Length: 427
RNA sequence: GUGGGCGUAGCUCAGUUGGUUAGAGCGCUAGGUUGUGGUCCUAGAGGUCGCGGGUUCGAUCCCCGUCGCUCACCCCA
Picture (cartoon, rainbow, N blue to C red):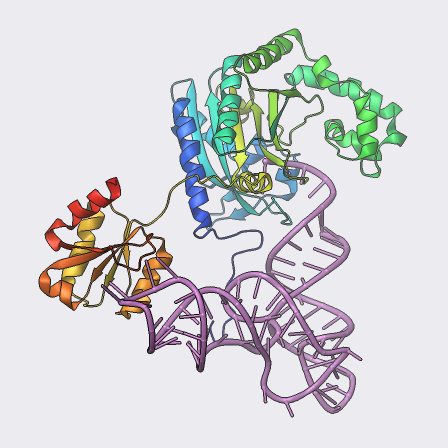
């Protein structure tokens, strides 16, 4: 700590990830990338900030996320930019800009920013894995996107995850339904929760998503969107549900599922972590957005995507008590050197070049201190070089897992080290 | 944006119904023992008790403000 200046901290609602937790992040990322790869996706990277219009047109001017949670700023050229609050809009903008051949399948890992009060599972900067498919409205792709997510959760050890699914129909279905719903809500206005009683007209669909008993009571008896979608939308939805059933993915029809971004139509879905008892138990979700490319100035192109919050995945894993390691990140070798000779530095470089994760102590510490460091490093073997070994051109190799305090250590010539180590690891 | 809880060593936390030099465990450093590590022993470093103001003879403890953390609401990943 400094004498005069208070130490800086990460901004509110953001966090640093250090080891050993960061190994979990590496593992999740590797597994997600592998899942995406198996489904034929390739990585897409887009800027974390975009013209404000991308999100205004994308997630919708009227959405809460756009109205009160955007990080908007002006650059020196007076351009109005925003940090991305979610992944889809930017990726679709990139699609419109570059017009890759379709179907275009892209996956990403990105930070997302929302200006809101942080709490468990909710941050100002969080991370999302996601995939998008542009250029087809084949229900098969809906099935595959959902299956990818399903398999990803399974691969990282989550078992108690429920898939909620609904269809929002297309634009015309929805506006017709809103009329019916509004009529119904008007008749039952005084039964709604305090929050929605006065303002439900502003966005009737939101009432469906209300978690309060009063609203649930009313809407559970009211008209359902799924019953008011057109035949085409219904057929599309049925194909999705049947497709999922055919590959053994269990679905829970959730007629009241309404997601927060305006661009969704037809298939919408959400993955809920049952073990994570919180209002933030939604670990991922997505849906179809067949009008979004047009909103962003492109040709009409169907699209569907899925996003999942990394922090919430980790909370869900914790809640389920999943302890399975995702990625082995342990040291192979720790070199103890009391001579400070460059011969040792060269030897270590050789071991690293041969593929062994190798660390060492610095600052010419005592043998005891270095042995202790080796022990705590988690390395499998310690390689010791003292004055005696240096003079003899040799190294002492010691198994740090054994309890015998070095009675079985072996000594090899420096030139034979890589071979000797390889031999030890194959045992 | 609104409301609750919290803020003491690197980490996890005690503690003082306000009273002289603020504690523990872990970690860290040095030394001893162990054939050169994991156990054990000894010693040591490290704290403006978040920050600012007030009450008081005296505040880490009480009051106010502020910043931060945390949890909840709205909404979302």
